[in-house]
Amino acid sequence: MLGPSAHVDTFTRDNLPPPEQWPRFLLDGFDYPEWLNAAVELTDRLVERGFGDHTALIGNGRQRTYKELSDWTNRLAHALVESYGVKPGNRILIRSANNPAMVACWLAATKAGAVVVNTMPMLRAGELAQIVDKAEITLALCDTRLMDEIVACAKDSRFLRQVVGFDGTANHDAELDRIALRKPVRFEAVRTGRDDVALLGFTSGTTGVPKATMHFHRDLLMIADGYAREVLAVGPDDVFVGSPPLAFTFGLGGLAIFPLRFGAAATLLENASPASMIDIIETYKATISFTAPTAYRAMLKALDEGSVDLSSLRIAVSAGETLPAPVFEEWMRKTGKPILDGIGATEMLHIFISNRLEDMAPATTGRPVTGYEARIVGEDMQELPRNSVGRLAVRGPTGCRYLADARQKDYVRDGWNLTGDSFLQDDAGFFHFAARSDDMIISSGYNIAGPEVEAALLAHTEVLECAVIGVPDEERGQIVEAHVVLAAEVLADADTVKRLQDHVKKVIAPYKYPRSIKFVPALPKTQTGKIQRFRLKER
Image 1 (cartoon, rainbow, N blue to C red):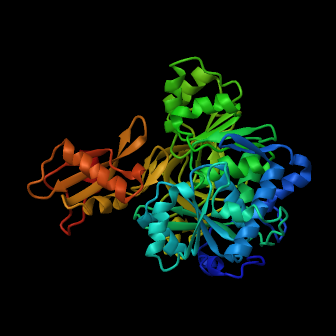
Image 2: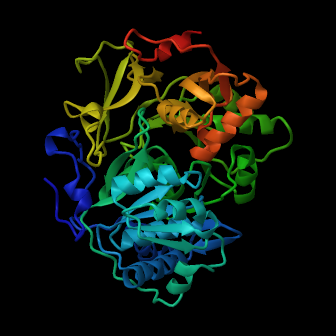
Image 3: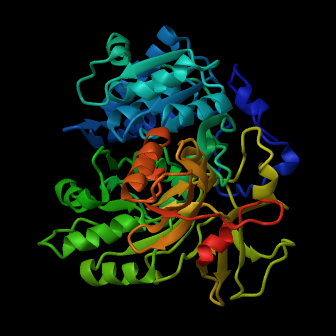
């Protein structure tokens, strides 16, 4: 039974899945008041608790205290409501790299009662259009350095009516900033319900048609009050750093929600690439790092190249793809710092199975976070014997609620969330990753849908047919590999490879491009003409 709502625009609640398709939520121990605004709890509440002078955000050459962040977000919220007519329940898209201004816009929109859709700066107009159409977004806030694609999206959109620029640097010199600077620093935040949707997290799915996962105000706090409190033991002296985009729920949790919930500091850097992570840890004396195994591999290479001071680091968190045992062992050997593997999902909002400091081990994902239950099941949803590989099923305080999507019935069965991963559980109760259950390609922690890359390639006049698969890669876990049948008289050479790769980078987000292209005379198919991708993987 859902609690009361402050949304006057009821789109998200109207488009929740039918109750019978929901997972079973386990909420014992997660008690919140009926009326709850997550952004207030992450800003104003910290000031009330005496953290006003503590550093909240580090980025763009300056540090901002909790009092400054509270004032900044309140001014922005005034601007959104009074100058742009934002009503509770409206969806707002935010387009930016990781910087303090993006966090401020997200918090301000949440204070105004809006439902936020954070997006990656690499997305192209066509990809943004799918998100805008799915969520019926009318207002976008965009870093002025990244306007072209969202403006192009708005030009042909039947929903997106306003694109407002904000300054992603520290200058506050853009339309939204200039309006906000004239607003008061006090704002009466919308009294949202704990069961009001606060965030839509988009995930591609293997079809390439995006799915929107719906997360309530209480969900945003539960991932901090569960995983971050229990596994990381976050305190006010912690400094967080990492490379995942804030548009990913892994990044939003690890680089915004977790630090702000406990009065800690979040380091938000647009250049937080894996190669520069060590410098960032040294410079900002980071205590907790969040990134994917690919980045830790790159950091290990950097360790070999010179003297490095990681003395401040308390915990390295790895997620996005499974942490290979050799990387775990080399990291522990060279740094002596704990590295905790975990698994999360956009549908679940964040990590739900994790190693702990006291029992971490290589090639082990760990045990369920407090509040969650996990089991290994067969196709009939019956639990399998220990040490059997099967489908990972999980339930807990968070879970899958797709916005108006028939795929809800695939992800949730019998009250359990099926993550699309194959695992086994050993006799001691620890979970071990086996493989992806579907055809999603996970490269450097990014989810890439093969059909989306195929569609981009097929838009090129030189491509007759193609099929895309993920192939193992030591550095990235997997890379995208395209098997291409060329049109007549097109040369199968290196120049053609580069032309096709450049084309894909222009059509969809560049990280999705095929790093490997193989030219073939024909694709393996069934009698009905369906491409047999498994045959390509066997080659």
